[in-house]
Length: 171
Image 1 (cartoon, helix red, strand yellow):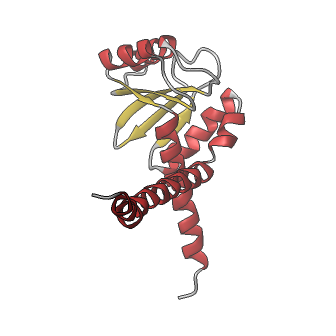
Image 2: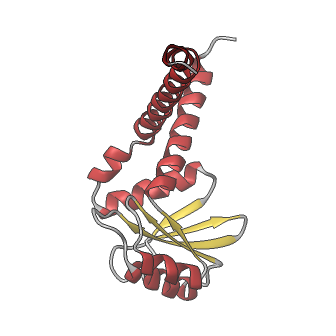
């Protein structure tokens, strides 16, 4: 193959494929940015701990759970108690600037027993350390990190927007 043929091949096949990939990456990035905006994660990051607990209570109510925010101190390791079809879930809420460690997992494991719950969750606006993930796995604790919180929040916010739009759409 001569040089001009290679150049022509590049222009006809490889260049458009590269442009397609770059376009696809831009679209994926835009979708991700839209998801971030819709989730309200930037506002969540500005909340204090109690506001985060109240936010999670509202979020889980919108997802169909009955929720109870426990008192601030002496909560025995649970910030929220959720109920869904008679199943009790204890939640440790951590609005942190750093990764969440094993202490939060230990607390919610104790809360699960104290509140006689079936499930235990730790929810954060950040991520979990590797030891926290290992301990959670060993104790059947569900960890909801920043990525899943963004998805849940965006889903609820979209549902609210859709409901509001449907309410005002003429038939």
